[in-house]
Image 1 (cartoon, rainbow, N blue to C red):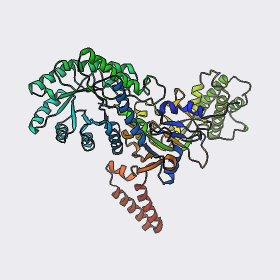
Image 2 (image 1 turned 30 degrees about the vertical axis):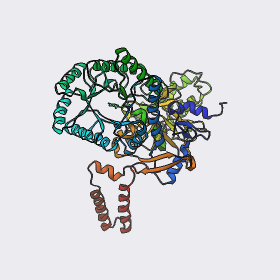
Image 3 (image 1 turned 90 degrees about the horizontal axis):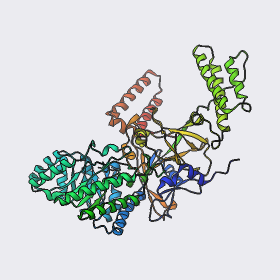
Image 4 (image 1 turned 180 degrees about the vertical axis):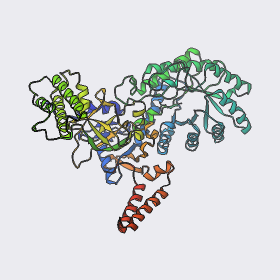
Length: 636
Ligand SMILES: *Cc1c(COP(=O)(O)O)cnc(C)c1O
């Protein structure tokens, strides 16, 4: 007898609290709960109520759901942790962070971050010309920084100088010597003095997926020799006082705190030496990299991190202080460019399972017929041998009969009916073996293989390439969890496949307890009842990196604010419709008016021929146009 299933079991299996960072948990009613505001942990939103309301409003899934309170909370937590640590450490600089908008450039996201960060003079970082155009318009706080990274041309630099004219604290971070050679004459010509940052190429090698961001072969940054040459040039031009910031960025999703400490030591030492040379630096910018515990293991795997935000901040503040005190230089103001850590939690994708693909699904009548092939009778004997054979032996025999049957079929010896019988019996045997095994105490070397073979595929109404690009590109783990029924034992092992016609369109890594698994237990699908799943922590990069594979396009977005006077403690503030079929086609240079006209012309021709009735022709024409204006995802 197995024990009854509890919420704690579901929590253990899906690890919601481990990756949820205090925002996500499972309620007693078996659905996901969100406490979006770190200052009001008692205000919780039931995800099922959110989904019910979305559906009641006629919004089609899949949808991106944004919890704006989580975004605000993350901005507050980072800034307040720095402020508190700085006070505790008697550190003499302040923290003036920036949000790198490449992590999520959605206007609503950037606006919310700017608004929540206002009391802390939290600024923005841009890495390209269009991003600079956005931050020029959105970061109006004259005390907040605007940091400009990435390779720059004359327009990029000119726009930055425009920002100086608008009294913004815009810092142009020099990535290459030639950028400075361009900047100096430009600033003299326009009569605008720049604030200059220097990006150092770090010697410390980070590990993980972004290891290439540091080390001598890094794409960005200046070597020590180049930094000294730049200082020389600035001196000659009487512009040394413009150099105010030292910057480094050793990679994203830094899993190991030791690498962060190393980078901080290296950066702080360089800062101190430059100060001693007479460079009037005011800021030390430690870049991004603050990690997210996507898989909930608190480890140094690529999808986790072995430290908390508090530890990260403490290591930065105390690390810089120690070196500055040793070198007898003033403490710099600290800048960080955390993107992932600010945005990852605030959005998720909610969608439905639209079908199940199952090897064991189809059944054929397996009763014996006269004159059937010996392989069929052999397999039938195996079906009846459950009590007499060792599971391993039975499994091996079944696999071998199946292989022989396949060979025989190719030679024309077995009929289609016989193949269907064999197949039905084969899957029946495998299923029985699987059920008879006790996962805990019985070691069966093919067990994992068996589990994989028997796992169903749940067909999920979304595109990996649009909504979870990193799961495909770099093997990132993202939590995927049913929204409801978590008080019920999940009885089906399955993997999640998307609706693109690409066989790469599937998730291949799942959180199962503290392990990463090839498949995941979910609940049995019920006829006439939708099964909703959420893919979480998609707010950083995933939200904005999606591509046009299969022309699915952007998802509908639902923006949620928490409010304790509202029923369910939340309200939908805005719905942003997803990309219509028409819009995606137009980005691929199709002329949809022309397409509609062409199809109409073809329909009219059939009407004239009499193969389509006139009324029916009008209906087909309207239908085609309606589909053009409609959603690209599956309607259920
Ligand atoms: C991408 C990037 C960041 C953001 O890194 P996260 O790991 O998301 O915090 C910060 N700074 C620079 C220069 C970057 O390229």
